[in-house]
Structure formats: structure tokens, C-alpha cells
Amino acid sequence: MDIAWIITLIAIGFVGSLISGMVGIGGSIIKYPMLLYIPPVLGFVAFSAQEVSAISAVQVFFATLAGMFAFRKGGYINKSLVLNMGVAIVIGSFIGAYGSKFLPDAAINLTYAILALIAAVMMFLPKKGDAQTDFTKVTFNKPLSAALAAVIGILSGIVGAAGAFITVPVMLVILKIPTRVAIASSLAITFISSIGSTAGKLIGGHMLLIPSIAMVIASVIASPIGARISKKINTKALQWILALLIIATVVKIWLDILT
Image (cartoon, rainbow, N blue to C red; front, side, top):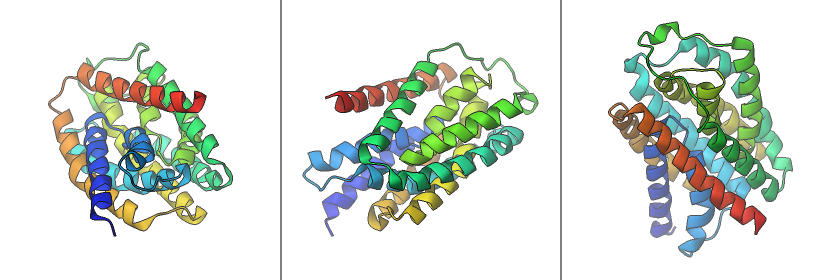
């Protein structure tokens, strides 16, 4: 077993999970391209898109679980929102994750690129601020949120991303959820979604044990640190961090697809 390879995977997992804890995403929007491109650049065997999506699914499960615990005392997690979107997204993510076994790598990468592009555009649309102080009284359209969650689950399940990087913009722009509630609640929703994604990838037969373990170890350590940091950062700064990360990923993925 190559120690340098393991260290590389842990480093990728740590960086991605630190950022995911800060901005309330599962981290796949960062780690998907990192796992796809960094190992071959450093001389290691490249992962296929199928393998990357499977590793991401397992990692997201543990990263969001750790990050969710870090946020649980802040009062920002809206239980009604989590339950309403969580049920729909876990069903969709299982369908997408299992169905991805029948798709070629190019289709998986294209699905990822489209999702990331939509998320990038939505991050620049008008959003509801955090003027509201009583986060227990947040209201939202339940049928619409469930329908959106189901679609997000299917598409994100294909790439093993659990959908937080698109769920957060959807909650901010369409459902008009306050930023901190959206970020904290998305971790819980993504955790639920990752159950379906992980099960689908496992049944599909694309799981890699050692890389998954390396990413999980890094996630459990880094995600809570990121969540604690996020509580000390301005809301607008969190939005810009997420937007810039998404845009960088979109540019890289689309350049590869087009060239």
C-alpha cells in the first residue's frame, strides 16, 4: 500500500471537509474534481467517475454527520424543513445512485457540471437576509420544497454528491430560507440524502474501501472545525466562499467536457 497515496487522499478529504463544514455542503463539489484530477497529476492511478462518485457518497455521509453535530446547539436547524426535504431527497438519491451504474463516466461528469452550473447561477440571484432573529418561525412552501428535493436527490445521487451544493442555493433563492438556517439545515438534509446515495452506490458495486476510509477519517476531523469557523464568519462572506468554490469547479469541469 502506497503511504503517499493514502496521505494524498486524506489531504483531499481534509481540505474539502473543512470547507464543507464552513458553508454547509457535503464537500463533494470540491472533492469530486480533486479526486478526479489530483491523483493522476501526482503520478497515482486515476479514479473513474464511477469510483469518485462512490467515494464521495461515503465521505459525505460522515462529513455531514460530524458537521450537523457541530451546528445542533445553535438553534439554526429547522426540523420541519429537514423532515420535509429529507424524506424526498433520500428516495431520489437512492434512485439516482443506483441508476448511475448504468451510465458512462461522461454522463456522470456532465450531470455534475450541469448541477454545479445551476448552483453557480443561483448564488448570484437575490436572497433573503438574516434580519429574522426567531429562526423557529421560518415558513416555506412544503410541496414545492419536497418536489425540488426529489429532483435534487436523483441528480446528485448520480454523482454521489448528496446535493448540498445545489440544495443551499435552492433554499436561499426559491424557498427564501435565511442563510444560516439554510446552511445548518442543509447539513441535516444532506446527511439524510447521503444514506440513499451510499446505499445505492454500495448495491451498484462501485465502492472502494481504502480511499473511502481515508476520506472518512479526514471528514470526521475537519468538518466540525469548519462548522465552528462558520459561526464566526459574516453571512455574506459565507455566500461568497460558496459561490467562488462552485464557479471554480464549473469552469474546470466544463473546460474538460468541451475540450
